[in-house]
Length: 296
Length: 230
Image (cartoon, rainbow over all chains, first blue to last red; front, side, top):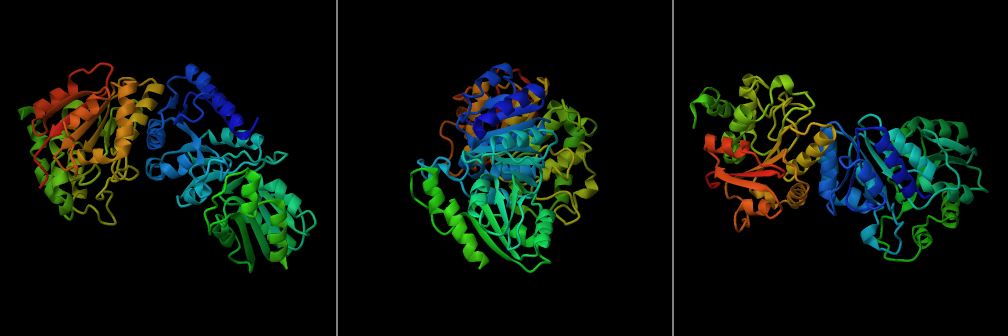
């Protein structure tokens, strides 16, 4: 199962397990959750193609003491109803678990309308959000279920791109140790990062949780290597976490290379996801070149 | 106006006059005072004592602009002390030009940006239903110009189709919408399956009757007509 299918199965389990859980949809994935909707008609709510209402409904559910999961494609979930995310969850001081699928360009042939590389940067303008970027379906499942207790505001970003293995764990995990630099791979960027840096003497860190940012973990890795060069490889807008790296290393002279979806141009191609990876320099070969050039 | 509401209601102009500095929204504040009073005095079971009861009635002030009448009614009903009104909007005050639920007990939502109260009310009704509180009333107050916001059209359509007899939207109509609503505001709700009542927004008995006459299986829209905005 891919991440989206795994999430839908886990959401149905959460509905069965906890009478406070509700799922709010705007037609996307409604068919896949039809069985759960028949079992829990008061708690699987499809408002039609109305993303503003979907988000506000989640806010109202939370105000009434429920734990809402809100799900649609990333562009419609975060961008179309952004003021509802800001006001009807954050400013009301209530929580929800927002789950997107589509990532930056999973729908590679759909064009810009279905692509949202700016989603994490947008959420990052709001205080108090936890942001999960799983790199494997099993991570997605675990992160969803761990997000259900409590009343925090959580963004879970699913993708069709995934790594071969799940790396379950909190914060930055060390997958390889080296001395010339520290490379941080986020979610689906891991396998290609390991491939790209196989011949480089660098430490590779992995995380599926990018907010809050594991500042202590990064400082420890930089201290351990003695290197001052840091590379951040994110599957959304390049540099989205640059400020978090800068804050983490405010006492440490360092250089930072931020890789991710390019900001300088709107890439107007269709094709496969791999074509988009190439266009943004996020394939393994391009990552190798970028990191080598940066490390000097 | 009825005599049984005199004691508190007649004190509201004095309380409102304690708040100054928002003349831009003065008319907006006073357009709502009669509706707010009737709701809090005669319709809704909302008190400082039951403010944390999960099955309580809810009042969601969607039109958060010009909240002087709202604060005055909350003060009169014991949610805050009237001494707080005089220094509203100061750095020390809990009372701003738009209400903040995190700071003011009794305020169910933080509002100011238009088009959020009715959609939040729909989510609240869904949540109350799921928790088994099917009798708790959820009332939200909007302005006629606020219906310009597309988010309200999304909400009106879904609430009508779902049913939601717990839900009441009261629209203060002071004819301030830039492009107007041909056929009247009630028509926008009727076509989506709501029960509607259009009444004089200054007539307490008419408002009371509009709010309390049963409307089985359907949400209720009360259009409260007041003087045209100057």
